[in-house]
Amino acid sequence: MNPNTVGFTAVLADDEELILKRLENAVDWSELNIRIVSLAQNGKEALDAILSYRPDLAVIDIRMPELNGLEVIKRTKKAGIQTDFILLSGYDDFSYAQTAIRYGAKAYLLKPVNSNELYDEIYRICMERSRQKGPKINRLYQNKLNVSFFNRLIDSKILEPEIIRQTLADAELPISDSPCYVCVLQFQEESDSFLSQAGAALDQYFSHEKHVFWNYNSHQIVGIFNISSTLPFKNAMGCLEVFQNLGGSLPLIGVGDAVSSLLECPYSYNRALTAMTYQLYDDTSRIFTYESICTVPPNLKLTDIDYLPLIQYIVKKDLEGIRSYCDHFMEQLLYVPAPPPNYVFSFCYALFHQVEKEFSDFSHNEITEIATAQDLYQFRKLSQIRRWLIDSFCQLSEFIDAVYGYATPKYSAAQKSTADEDDEIVREAKEFIHTSINKRIKIEDIARHVHLSPSYFAVYFKNKTNINLRDYLLAEKMEYARRMLMNPAVSIRDVAYDLGYGDYRSFSRAFKNVHGITPSDFQSKYH
Image (cartoon, rainbow, N blue to C red):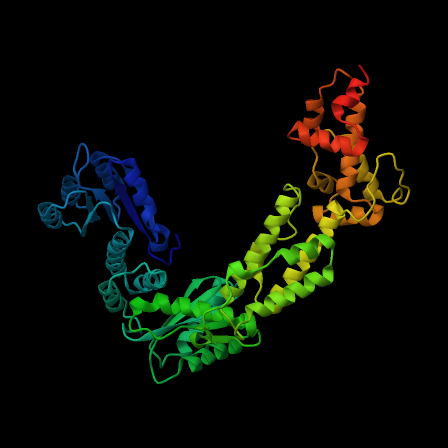
């Protein structure tokens, strides 16, 4: 551990292994700078660990084999070890609680243990012990606990107002449990040192305001301001001024609604996050307040989307039709100038997913993904989403045409193509197909062999040979089948399986379409 910060040790004890494991995972011990030194499964093991490690804290079950929890506390105190105990029990018996407190237990919790309650009790013990380490250590540890406290507050993990009031009093924080609002400063990603420097600069700039700032993660600094005569937007402008003076990248700032107490800060925080998503319509601004959030309900339902015209444009390789459809689709979504961004994202996701599903069924899952619907969420501008939809559907159309297009003449294995003889990629692909045709190969296998993506390779092959890849593969497969079935001893089903056909009927149909005769009739000629 860092020598400049205080660290604590803990022993956990319960005779039920599952509960012991849950205790170990119930709290982020590292966040509190606590190291678990022993997991004990009976009272004797717990006492031996305490006598050996002399931990700051022990969380133990009151009823355990060999020694119960109360006896462990009694013998620990007799040995002069100042461990703080939290006792657990499945029995709501006041006499146990009385005895536990008399023996010096700091808390008595009923099973199943509520992780928030457990955290709060451990937090209090750590606070008390940190004060005993001296003012400098106490201040460093207190800062760490403050971050933990406010993270839990924002994440809705603190449910009792009393916990908030006690923490504010113990930590002497420059904020009160009164009307307030949350301000979120979001970055692409910054170093911890920069965020710490920024946090100190923000505290200095707003020293006249009742507030707190802390580093929520590597992407966010979160602030809470008590309501004052200064407008929230003006304070947000002040945040930008701080970062302009620091010379770093300017954050995106979201300002949430005013709420009546700190306990309601999660609502204000989430509203600030939602406000920032409205950057989708204005990428020149850096500040977005809750007033940006659209309150007009949409008039379009997912069932209103008619995606069949788009399917037809993709199949026909009508790229202009695709562009026109996507433009009209985006216009439909803008029932107000700035609808909720999550509404726009969800409709675009639904459209893409429906098209993806349609062609997955059409192609028997042979088409590899040009893009994934999840890619949508990387965009921060409406124009980027529109461009992505058009590009994705156009690429899919090119791929469909390259693999399945029926506008070009069917390819026959007997045809001799000289146009692509000098193209190394096509030649290498054809050699791989020819030598691996009986290994159930897919487009992905061929593309990987020539070090290209499946979608790029299919289009490349079509452009170089003017042959649809599916037709070429089919012809090669049926030529392999023809050669194999000239031997009457060869099983038709084995040949079908080798070529990737799951049933005889589909193989027989494909063979007849190419050779004009069923496999069984063809093979009978050689008996």
